[in-house]
Length: 467
Image (spheres, rainbow, N blue to C red):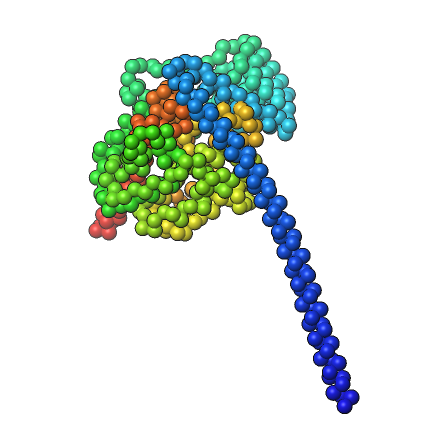
C-alpha cells in the first residue's frame, strides 16, 4: 500500500513538473514573440520613414524634370545650369566628407590613385603622377601640381608655382598660379566627327566616364557609337528568329516621356530591339519609378521571377531610381550584403537570376549618367554619386559571370551635355523616340557582338577537332 502511495505521489509530482515546464516554455515563448514583434515594429517604422523620404525625393525629381524640359530651347543657358548643379553637388559631397577629411601638407605626394575629399592639400614639393587630384577644398601653395591624369572638381587650385602637364584640369576655381594651365577645351579639331575621332576607339575599352569626357562631349560620342552600332547590326549574320528576350527595368525601359503618343510602347527600346534583331519575342518588364533594392517601389529583386522561364536572353537595366533614394545606410557594403540594402538586394537579384535562369545569357546594363542625380544631390547631401552604384554593379556582375553593358562609362546619352538633352533626352533622364532608338541599337549591337564571339569560339573548336 505504501508503495502505491509513493508511486501516486511521484506521478503527481511529474504531472506538476510537466505543467510548470509547459507554463515556463509558454512564458518564454511569449516573451520572445513580444521582443520579436517590438523589433519588427521598430524596423517597420524605420522603413516607413525611408519610404516617406524617398517619396518626397521622387516628387522633387518630377519637378526637376519639368524644369529641365522647359530650358531645352536655350542650350547655352541649359549648359550653364547643368554645370552649376554639378558644382553644387560636388560642394555638397565635400561638405559631407569634410568631417572625416584630414589635412595633408608638407609632403611629397605622388603615384596615388586618388587624392580627394581633403580640406587642404598644400605646402608640398610635388603633387604628381596621380590618377586623380580632385574633390578637395583647396590644392594650393605647392611647388608643383603636374603630371596627373586629372586635377578637377576642387573648390580652389591656386597659389601654386606650377599647374601644368596634366591630362585634365577642369571644373576648378583656378587663380594665382605662376605657370599657365593646359587643358582640353572640348572643341572639335575638324569638321568630321566620324573621321577625326575614330582614334578614340584605339583606347582601352575599360576607359572611365571621366577619361572619355576628356576626349570629347557626350553628344559627339553618341553620334560615333551609334554609327558603329548600326554597322554591327547591318553586318549581323546570327539568326535570332527563335530567341526570346526579357528586359527588366524602370521607366527608361517602359518608355517614359512618350505616354501621350498613340501606341507609345512601340518606341520603347525592347520593342525596337525585337525589330532590330528579328527576335521571336521581347518582353518589356519595365515599371516606372522602380528600383533594384527594396527601399522604393516595385523592386527588381522582388519581381525578377516574372521573367518567363524559357527566355534566351535577359537584359537588366536599372539603378537610376536607386541613386535618387539611397543613403550610406541603405547602400550597405559589399562585405555584409544585408537585406534591404543596395549591395544586399543586388546580390540577391543576381544570385536568383543565375539560379532560376541557368540557360539564359544575362546582360547587366549600368545606368546612364544623368544631371538629375547631381541636381538632387545638391539639395540632399545624404545621396551618393552614381559611380558608387556603378562600381558595385560592375564588380558583382563579374562575380556572377554576367555580360556587362556599361552605359555609365560609355559617355553616350549623358544628360550632363545640353546637346544630348536637346536632341535625345528632353527631361534630362528619359529619352524621346530617337533616344530610345539609339539605346535599342546599342543593346542590339552588344548582343550581336556577344554572339559573334560565341560563333568564333565554336568555329575555332570545330577546326581544332578536325585537325
